[in-house]
Length: 105
Image 1 (spheres, rainbow, N blue to C red):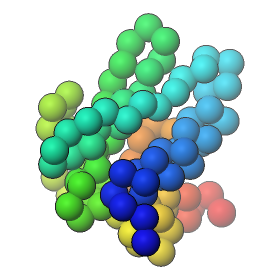
Image 2: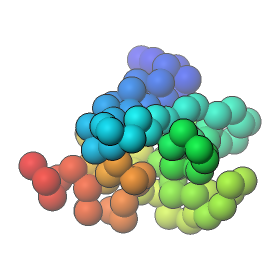
Image 3: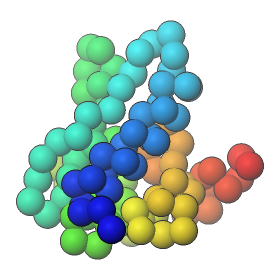
Image 4: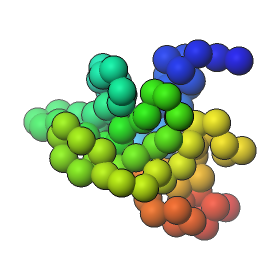
């Protein structure tokens, strides 16, 4: 089993592919930020950066951002679920449960 940092890197790699496919002429990209409790995933649009999601390092929960420093309540998925956290992921970030990849496949 991968450690949390490897799991996050694998998740971000899959998310980065979705972002790049949907923003190809704009070259948006995702970066991994540090943190003790939460890892911050940041979207870089070239001229600004915003928090794309937070990942709880203890549980693997994927959370929408409330602001730059804090996640919103209620997980949108989990890195260790059957979908590897990808069920509710859009290029804009994690969606409400049940409104992601499943609806498009």
